Amino acid sequence: MIRGSCACGAVRFEIDKVRALTTCHCSICRKLSGSAFGTYAHVDADKFRFLAGEDMLAEYESTPGSIRKRCKVCGCNAPGKAPYLPTVSIPAGLLDDDPGVRPMLHVFTSSRAPWWTISDDLPQHEKWVPGYEPKKS
Image: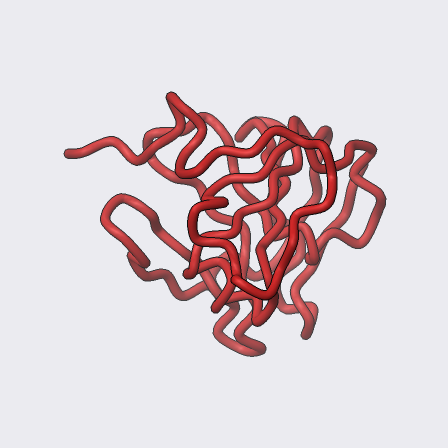
């Protein structure tokens, strides 16, 4: 079992298994994380459970088709599920335990911070990984 929580502990969850870790360099993830990128754990929806605080989440649409959630108390980014994907995306910094996997790719490298150099050999995608882009309604 992999546990996770927000900074104040109002939002807590558990995961059976992480499918993948990815690193996103888009401007929204950079601004939300206050860093050069955001790293996300992707988990099959049936392997993710809120333990507390699901009612403490505020949500907004950061870009068309992309819903973001935050803790209403501490403001941390929170787990969220895009309606067009079978997975829950969890800001990896919320994980309290080792997810058992390591980052596997970079997305939105076309908008990475100009002061950041990607120095690993992981696959890089200029935009979305093909097949995982938001679906138009």
